[in-house]
Image 1 (cartoon, helix red, strand yellow):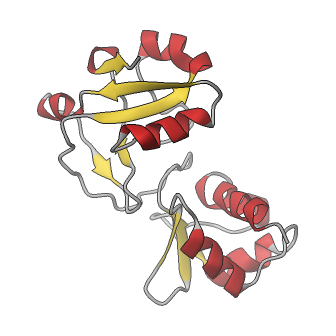
Image 2 (cartoon, rainbow, N blue to C red; image 1 turned 30 degrees about the vertical axis):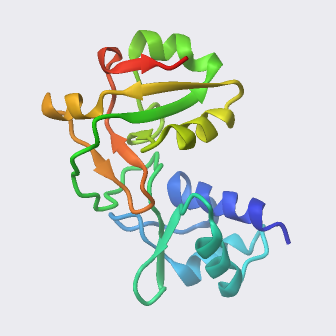
Length: 178
């Protein structure tokens, strides 16, 4: 069994396309664990122990269970409208965004926009941003003046796995790092 492929498939289901396996998410993004396992099993082998392992060992902490482990959801990164019950938080002075070199023209012109996601994802440290950027080719890191944005009225949220989220980052709050 390829746990990585199964984890990626679960991510697709819980963040973007639950209908692929015939399940629905509630308004907060929760899916019934038994229904998820049955649906995923149609194309990827999955049992409860494997699902528990995927959630526990996922290095990005993409998923959360409810208290009795009957429901599961993705922590962030949705392209479908769900309210994952994020609380607004005061960001640090700077946050970081890692991307691939091929996206810098658009970012330099339009700032950071969520595209197909609900939020722009930001990192609390430059090392994490570098890892994220490396997934998209030659990494480019932007420093975000997050506290200045917050003071200007922008909202920030911090997901349970430490990713910072905001609706967009205008160019004036970005500085490309060398």
